[in-house]
Picture 1 (tube, rainbow, N blue to C red):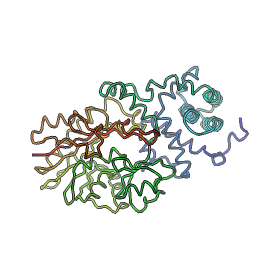
Picture 2: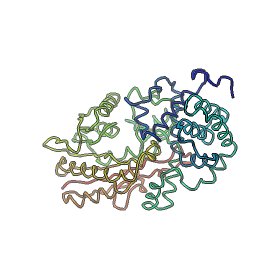
Picture 3: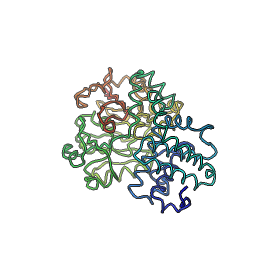
Picture 4: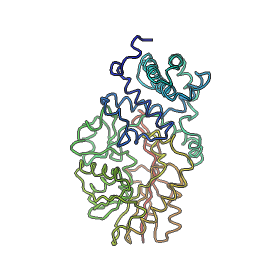
Length: 448
């Protein structure tokens, strides 16, 4: 062992980032806390503010790689351990996962990955006795791990079995496999720009997607990129940017954005000239939405309320956008914790809430008004079936099919019924990091 094995963290570059990564992985896997909760806001890890930008980026990549490859990591480590990962010492488990993730998928020298993982367990009272085990297992991983990964490369181990089974049943074996493969790659950064996408793509060393989104690989902090402080763009997955476009020309029209935070769609609607009322039940999320609008120099009325209970103005709205709470299984490429925090049993409660929001929105909509319903879920109950249920119950509504020309000619994202359905495997690219979309569903309905 190195002589400075008990050196303070400040003397060991990269150890603080790995310790915080281990805490956050432990938070997801053992305390069922979301990444968003642990990385932002009042519940954020207290150590984050001490990290330099470079270490913060490393920490995020460590966490995301472990969660994105969790099933494969479990297979590799189970083959290298006689008795499985020690369950009574979570830090030993986290250190093994983080060390193996670096060896197998990250550009980190093997010796550094091993050494820093050993230091991680040495600094934890319950795990310290496993330092020798961690050292031996990760050294074996450096020699044998890649072959163990190849053994299971076609098995889609990095999704919970219940979710993979659902996708196979609904989308077919081949598409489910393509989706699982797409989720294995670190995603790009997508930006919705106010104007001149080509110019911003050039300035940011990115590319312009057919939909007008600027896509780039992020190196460093988003807030340091050109145009951020000036409010020239906002971060928004290319698929998430599509539903707000389905209203057509909304200049001067009144639009309610239900469940609006963090505000990407609110910003789109306001930028298009609508009079927007943005409703969200979380005061903290509405505060974040207001901050985002202020940076972008965009105006919207904001309301803290449960949209399903909100009375709304007597005259109603010309348009309503519902980005409904859902299982968020379409966002796993950007939020890999979702795969391991969600359960199949969550779907029923969420579909009930979605129906409440849909029925409420019908009462808030003027005759002739347009309702756009969307979810970032790949589960049919939260998309196609939700709309079928609503149409059966509300004879005043009719579907207005989406045309390929409204989504930049991407006919593959339009369903047979005329709804929008994007998949993680859509928009492939020779560089997998520049391909893919979040999984989104959207339907457009008009009130007669």
